[in-house]
Length: 393
Length: 91
View 1 (cartoon, chains in turn brown, blue):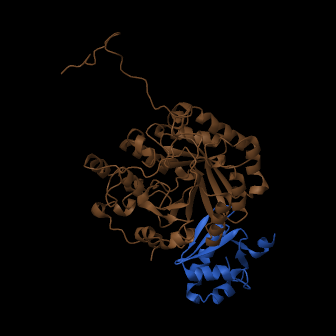
View 2 (cartoon, each protein chain N blue to C red):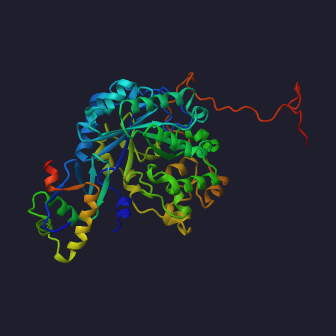
View 3 (cartoon, chains in turn red, purple):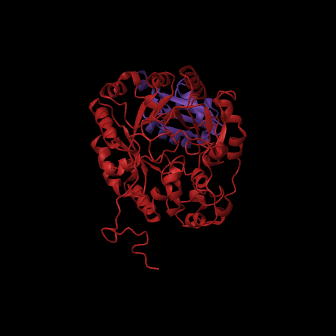
């Protein structure tokens, strides 16, 4: 049996586990995949979080991707970080940089972290203009300050994590230059229509010709660029990109959310992909190994309408979450199918599922991005008040 | 790699058993490697205690005809620092 077939049947423990520590966030990014903003009162306590780490150690989950929300604003974040690395669970955490002061940067570079900690700074534009449009005013400067602090403290190889959008695909070389400037590694990932991303996906997801630009760029310059294996739908252009060219949801990856709910993947925070809760259902291992949802995801998939496509073996139907949150059937094409089947599917009848959780802030703060553009067309005349001015039937 | 050399799993590497064999994870360089045969896992586990590579292959029950491919696999593991020549382990 080939390795990929073993992966499709699921492993005894995930290879790559994402753990969102809190739904609280100082930012309100327009495309937040977990609709974060406000803390959930049911979030795991410090003791419960330590118990999760103990269990991950027993299961030999070698590292965990910690995110949120903004994980560093949990008061016990630094404690949990140290607890994890002391229990053979390496940590890679994602942050917007808000708490990466020079002191914290020095701590991360110190022997206390034993080199078992990776830091990933989110940046969705190589310029403040492009970044702040989706991540909110001031967020570019916050991220750059954090990168500078890490560099000054001697922390090597931070990651700059970029969600690829219609507006920043043209900045790939600039992102690489920025990463080089800070001694960092560039990480590119795919925009998913998950969480608040559903609201802005139509405007932000890369256009078909941009998918090709991205693919060509990754093939030409992507040697030292991480992708989280998130672009396997691009494999249908021809040659597969490095990594696992397969949807790993519930098979080799999953997500633990701040209240201990276990979902099939970080991009699928929805009741349909909820496998169980590690507090209620006997622990993480029990949920991972026995949940009916995960058993189902590990059973052979048919490929549906895609099975007859010549490229099915390359892309394997693409991303489950991208299909689900755009209202497409899970056994059909990915909405960004590079063979064009996605556009056809999107043009047909579909209904986008309602969100099953939303921790967005009830009232917008000054950090909320304002996704408005200046009008590009001048008014018909200085005082054209008629709503039909300029309208020619 | 030669049959009479002495090797061992690197100290910062952990093996996790899986149905196909094992995952080897290196906490230092963050590399994750899949050991796709249970026999290879047995060889890797035996390396540190065995007198040499040959003894580890014998202990794991690998038939002699298969040794060249196992040596090649071990060389791949050595290139990723998953296993180290034994005198280096002590250092």
